[in-house]
Length: 66
Image 1 (spheres, helix red, strand yellow):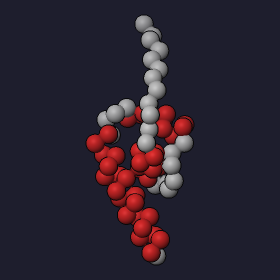
Image 2 (cartoon, one colour):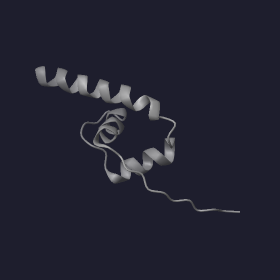
Image 3 (cartoon, helix red, strand yellow):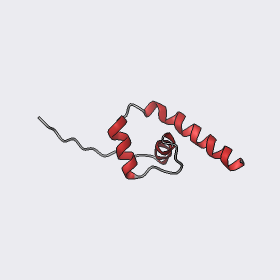
């Protein structure tokens, strides 16, 4: 039996930035990127988001100080 499941999530800018950083890009993840992230990982990467975000911010600061 096929069951279609849909749900909405509210995503903070911190998470959007971490998702982009995970894929080696800067800026905020788009709706499509967020949807792909949750389809692929669900909430299994929630514990990793803080670390990804912190590394992204540090890299951006290093790049700005160039």
